[in-house]
Length: 146
Length: 87
Image (cartoon, rainbow over all chains, first blue to last red; front, side, top):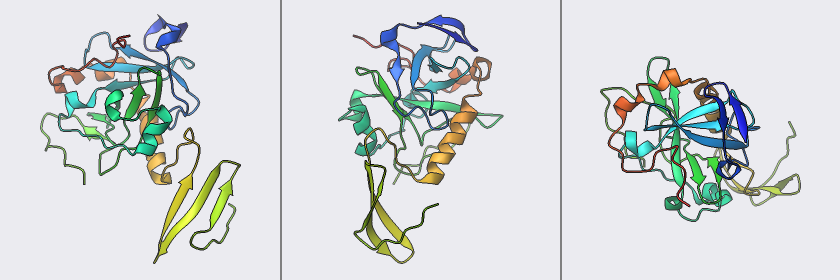
């Protein structure tokens, strides 16, 4: 399918590569179908692009690459809708945000993708985790969640 | 808002598939049990709203805003976020 995106111009996405989010994303509940794109210049970055709204996309990263001690604990009830028995079957990415001056990672609400079934969902991880983990050059290590 | 009074172990049905049960009442804290279809997410309201706000802010980011994110990345040992899955 061809999508006219505001960030990347016109792109082609194979139907089989589309990821279905039955509940959309909080705040973007109507966006149920997404494509995961690699960033052109940054190999650590991806973009989750809505296939129905060309202006809607969020930047995502693999959290462990930026927060090596990030251990996500997701209640089973959050994984069941994705048909995932074990978090290791899933790809976990986190959304990149900003404070205005620094980029941030949403470690509290990661996005879990069942690559085989091509479904995804943003879940709420257990424990005290930041909604906006700031990427700055000096920061204390992530607190272990309770 | 519909306001109902319930005692412990009593339930409320929302639509035909959501059941909310009072599991425990202790002091000023109520423990609620929720039975809902898997496709209906259930969250504490303030948490959900915070995530909504954060997603909307994040969805404003443009590629130019993220260009120096690589400086914070460690070495790659896992598939890139945009890699096509191995079939």
